[in-house]
Length: 403
Image 1 (cartoon, one colour):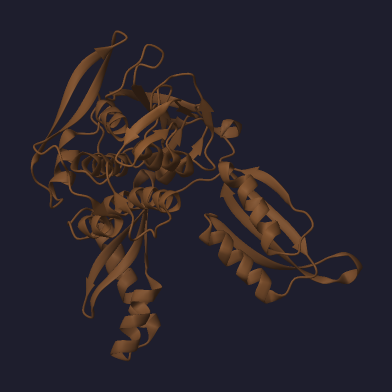
Image 2: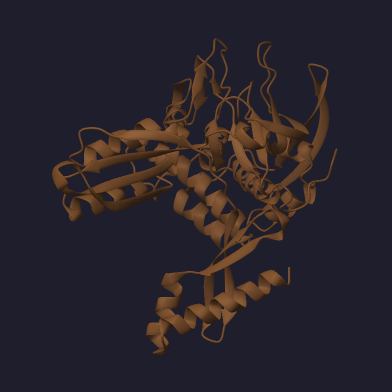
């Protein structure tokens, strides 16, 4: 097994081959077998204010394939119920790396939003039962730490779903569980005849929060693979997840990972156009913009553009038509190259200020100060905003140069 160093996957693809389903422990096990050092996970979960458990990793064989399996041994069978707000506070105050904390909170928020819809509650007040137990918290935070350690773009296969029913603390529920199916809205899935919960809410939430696209394995040159096992195994589906790390294929073989949607509108006000672009961003668009254009008969008009992931194309197109008077739109596929991003803090003479840090291959690194933090400092200290932003940018860049 090749040891994966921190950030060495920047610019690479990490494909989750979920032919047997998805769960939190399967994802974490596969990442460890891929080459993420165990200490990365141990150190991350060790910062959580949790006790009464031990973690271990063992090797076993399934279908004659050697796989890794991550265990969380909990001393007490009955776990306390935790709210999303409690878990978020636990993670954010734990001292975890900011990028890991943000990813973990994003995963829990995906679950909370689905549970709130199922049970008619608010996101903040959602009770986590199974997902709020120690083992699930460790699985999610450990997976977030492993994903951020690698730093690659996550891709995932079509998610398989079992049939039948599952016993929960709310009673017997159909498979796929209602929360799982809500989490997977907009994600390609396939039904099976397997009478088992192939994909859990935790596994679904991790890929929903972290994966950039879903489908067949993209054009890539593999350089490492890992196999992780979960607790369930059937004759048809052995409960194995494969993680494949590789470099995107070059030239024209690069996949179209995103779509641009555009609408030329000559009867929209600036207020409506601005509201539509804000709503699209809130609904998950990667970017949205407005351009002044001229249409037929010399009419001044606006072009509203949206950048979204492949799996969000239909949903974003409908929302664009819902919130504007357009009678049609066009779309086309585009490729996208991204740097790995995180929020870090710089200690300045005026106190701590957050900066957005982006890192890419070959040592490329950029830093940009958070406008809101700098604006607060400028107002409270009575100094020009441009001075604050220039000072923070310089300090952050020097820190990056010293890495």
